Image 1 (tube, rainbow, N blue to C red):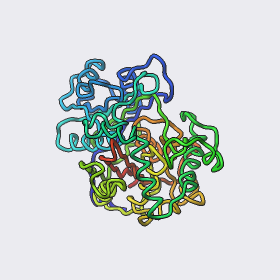
Image 2 (image 1 turned 90 degrees about the vertical axis):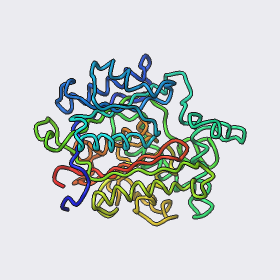
Image 3 (image 1 turned 120 degrees about the vertical axis):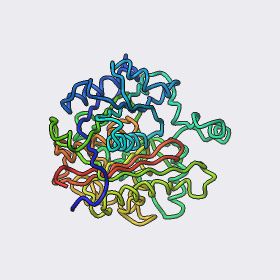
Image 4 (image 1 turned 90 degrees about the horizontal axis):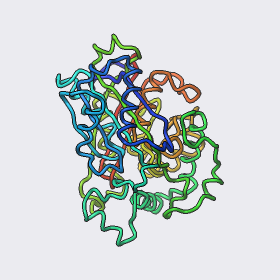
Length: 389
């Protein structure tokens, strides 16, 4: 396929710290560790980084100043910087912002950084419950709506009622993710599970069983973006940001289709249009899966199946390695770890570089990376391509 759109910005370095329980770590220490790993991956010196974008951890009370303390800790003085909190959509949206900075000359090398000690930080994640969005959302606890599981449970229940989606179909998503995690030495949960295990796991909030829900983990991640021209002199193969899109719903659940996330479809369609592709061109999909229903919805939003058919689409191994559309090849947030959508992005880069080892999708050239966040308000989508595209 010829290049019909998108940017000339590329990803040239990625860094991922261990994920899981990391006693003694802080949000800042995880950010700095991931930054160093990405620098080494790209073969860059610290002083070459003149753009710094960050997503603060979920337990951080002072997130708006994260870029300032991170720059101080790293010993760099960027000319383009800022901190952003859009939940699981942040990674994709920061990469889009980094690409814009590269193409407009605001920076030469932009590091997009995340770190969160959510598992050992001894605090409840602030954004997961929606409390950071104001008292209107926080007060939903009066109706029994506590935490992120509640919001996605609305989506799952509605999808089941309208389209006949079943708990067993959600279980297919969990089993596929765990199968991929079993091939990933960095994944937190590598013990294979069966559909029977999924059905037997305890109920969290109807209709979600425990194995429908994502993990909580400590960890850091970093992605470095530059121009295609500068990338030619660097250590690793560049991955092109061929298309990108964002989508938002600001009204929360008073929007009649808030539960379905129509803004997620908007984000993907914008990314497809910019890249000049369709769903049929995608070889592998890395989709933010805070809950199993998230994967089902993304498959519909991204055009891999029709509305209401996501449940049946995941049956028969279709989203497993070797299937029609491998999804979340690292194990996803359900089984690998939960660095807020950053690992899905990094896995996409590794797939296109051919670095995924046992979980490598043969011949992968086009990857869709998608993220969703907050109280089902935010969405991001990236179409990534390898050098040959």
